[in-house]
Amino acid sequence: MSTDYVPVFLVMLIALVEYFGFAAAVGRARHRFGVKAPATSGNPDFERYYRVQMNTLEVLIIFIPALWSFAILVDPMWATGLGALFIVGRLVFFMGYVKAADKRSLGFALSSVPMLALLIGGIVGAIRAL
Image 1: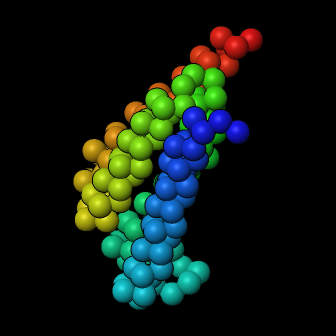
Image 2: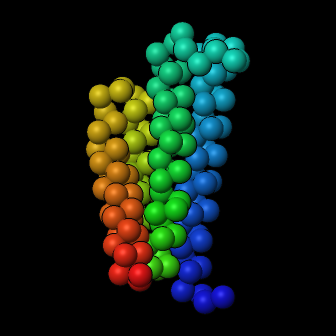
């Protein structure tokens, strides 16, 4: 295997570690705010932690295939950079959203724009490869 893709693997794995960290934060928030499993509502502070985790899960289903499609069909280094920006954006999203729902916009944009670029680039790369 070409070492060109090692940074892409690293970005993917860091994104998954980040998601694991968000899941752990939800567990801590569950305890901190007294929300007993299986409940996912009842405390607005807990619900913001939970929504960060769920929203991140929702976008990972787009991010990971888009990352790899772009890396293989367009350029692995650009995929790595865009993927790293996605990770930073998700962290900004987490930090803003757990403070207040209206503080999530910057992080949402910082993660959505590179994810969309990876997705569109992957589609264009696939069409060009035909």
